[in-house]
Image 1 (tube, helix red, strand yellow):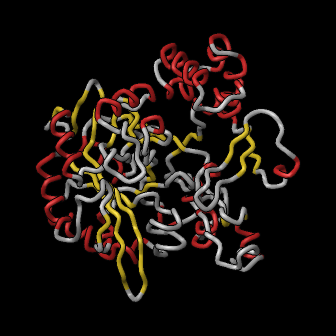
Image 2 (cartoon, one colour; image 1 turned 90 degrees about the vertical axis):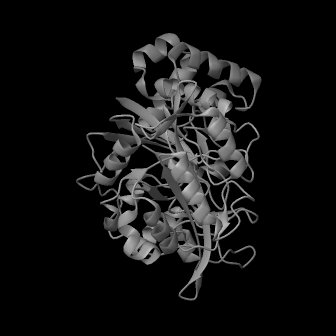
Image 3 (cartoon, helix red, strand yellow; image 1 turned 180 degrees about the vertical axis):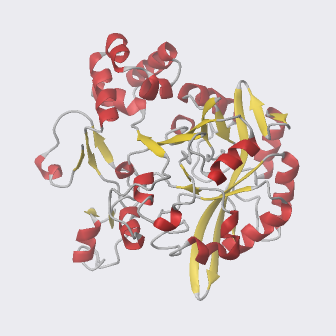
Length: 412
């Protein structure tokens, strides 16, 4: 069975998250987006867990749950801030489990290491080694995934918060890692530059804080819709059953380039090195982004493709394409109407962006929207890369101001 999965989202009980992140809305938007399997997020929060138990129908033989035709997988994110070997590390990990009973055991264990009730993504003084060790004691069925593993401030490889290897972070429990999450500011091709990551499946998830962003990154499988089957496919890196990931263009992510948002400084890593990592405006250290960190750890050239690599497709969200085609903001009513019209015509956003053949797009869509989708598929875009917490800016049509052209990244 072919299906699309987004394992990592958040509920309305996490900081800076929409109040609309409730089960009925999650199911509604999963259908619009074309997501068949959605992570619940935040299973550590007592109120959210209570809502999940009220709404979700357990499917014990599948290790999954059902609501209004959408399958769910129990997931949560743990923020670990701790000292190790005289340095402070900040690492986020996603944890998944096949039953409420197992989640309750996980939550009981985590509660000994900090307050898990204050936020949907609890902050604990628990090392990655300790987390992996304690999870392994509960059950070998638990999936452990380092989250957005290159983000500067909160990830296993982060330039300001992380390690130089998985072994440094997880010790002997590195073997318990199910997969790695690439994050919005990196894509599989960037991760392929590190030979140490070859044995891991690279997954992509939305890390969504609002319903409309569900599925902006996702994973496409062709296997049984079953928790244990998915876990095995990821651990085995089975290319026959894990088909590809759906990616942001990494340049659009908030931490692709280096820089200082407040000083309006946006640098490619080569420019950062030329300035010795110091902002020329405020004379403080620049926030070094994902591209810088990948190049720092890479042992392969750009463009290297491992023999066992699982492919990916880079996409731009449909509402962004429609908005640019119409020359409007994506939050406008006209964009929302056309977006929903397209969904109701073709079935889901995923179908429009990936599955519908070009000839049909041009016969049934407004010409400029169809042309926009075509350009995205062909990677004919101009992107001003994101940096220091600012999303990158994608241009599908038209010309930019001369002052911006110098900084644009053109993809062919």
